Image (cartoon, rainbow, N blue to C red; front, top):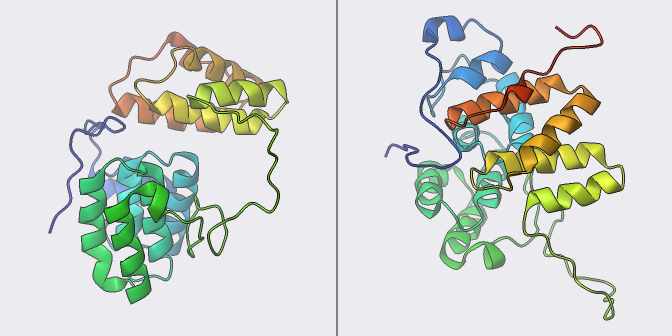
Length: 242
């Protein structure tokens, strides 16, 4: 069974052409960012490669190509269930066919308990399927060994809800949580239908944090989506940044 990612709003098939033989000579950080293949070469199925994808997915959970690459890369590793859990968490109730295909590809390598867990998740959806448990290797799970239950209930507390990552990021900025706000704004930018104010706010955060590495990585992901970016993405380099 083969997996193809088609018509995904968060990804675009067009990448700059790169000689595959040259890619394999590069460190994992550069090689993995340029390969479209979902089943990676043995040259890249390494501990550094797995660590790189885990870090990348922690920051960009909606990069579905990287998600699938990571699951397949961990097919014979103890982190397989955690990598698959991250794909399910990122998609929530979306991408049901993709989740089914990836699960089918690695099902034989999962324990009976984990097969039942993901089968139930596919059948019943995110709200019932995700029980807050942490599986070894996950970078998106809450870290709890079992379903969380509140110890204290504040009956008089008004529930606050956000309709977008942008709104939550604005609140974080008001409280000085710059790093959290940056991650939220990056997630909002990856949504083609996100709040149009996000780009300006995120570029302002980048200009303050000088986190040009994250800026360049996100710009590449947006270009893969075919997005038109404002000139502000070419921020002048300061403080000896080239």
